[in-house]
Image (cartoon, rainbow over the protein chains, first blue to last red):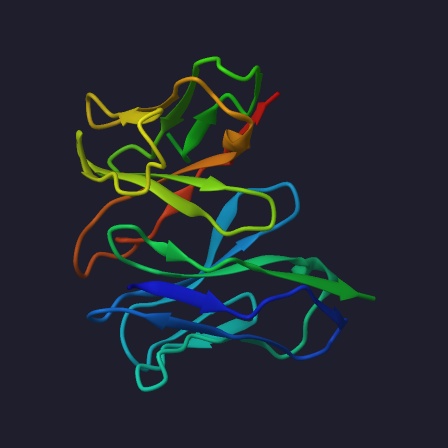
Length: 109
Length: 118
């Protein structure tokens, strides 16, 4: 069935390190893909999105490219900051808007 | 309103009691979703409304859970005979649906209602 699978955490990085969080999806058709972020004590917020194959979503230095051939939407950032510490959720559109289980990121100074 | 509003933000109840959780979506958003999030997990789909009708309620875990949206705006999630396993954060999200419209088909979430069943 339709689903989203993302890399398990937790992930701990030093400030200015490179970040990749993997996400793959299954779907019939061509869904829109999203990354949501949940900062400590806050609700889910949209980080970025891509609506069709080869689209690149970007925001706050984060990027993800919609890869139809590998059914992936990996999240990347070239240089993480302490303020990026949060839980990141990959999601795909559909009646149910399927979410992954989340990847916790901690960035240490 | 400016965002999705959920009340109460926290609810503590005893096993067996009845609970109502309210969601006030962004004005003009026709689609409304309820999710449940347990600690360390992603949002688990419960039900989706398009307008006043439940377009997909396949995520409701059993018949103790019910949701309504009588006027196509505010929605109430109702849980009867609560159990300890119902303890979670209940999230509401809304969206407007459309093609080629900026911001369409993107979920905006409320802060959630944390339910604790003792």
